[in-house]
Image 1 (tube, one colour):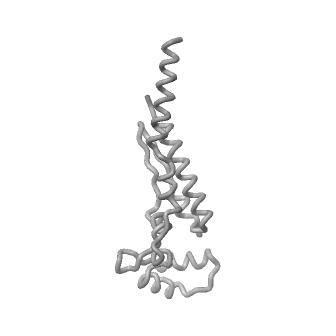
Image 2 (cartoon, rainbow, N blue to C red):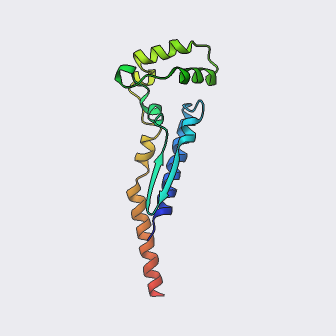
Image 3 (cartoon, rainbow, N blue to C red):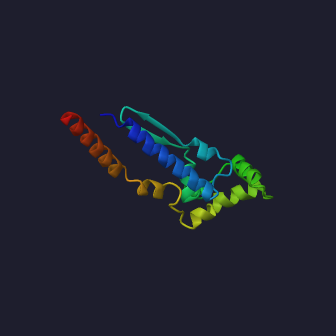
Length: 142
């Protein structure tokens, strides 16, 4: 039995929910992170891939001394897309020293963590296995 389609459907649904959460929470300024989310499936396996920046949509960006910080060009692009009048160098320095406000607040779980937790893959497969087994028994009886 092949479960590749079940896996693909599950991962595509997760990707849609994650993108919707990003849009709802307005953390999709340029759209690059949202567009980076992709699903790959092959022979009963699958992966949900995304830019490493996706993690920062939940955790925020820590200070540079804790493995965080941001690049100046990222700060410039974010300011431009948001239509703000900020000094990109000042923003970069502040984040490099203090982390983002989201990081300082302890992050959140509403972008991808809750989506994954709410969509129990084990239940989906048990239901699919039950459907397939029932169909096989019915076919054998006919």
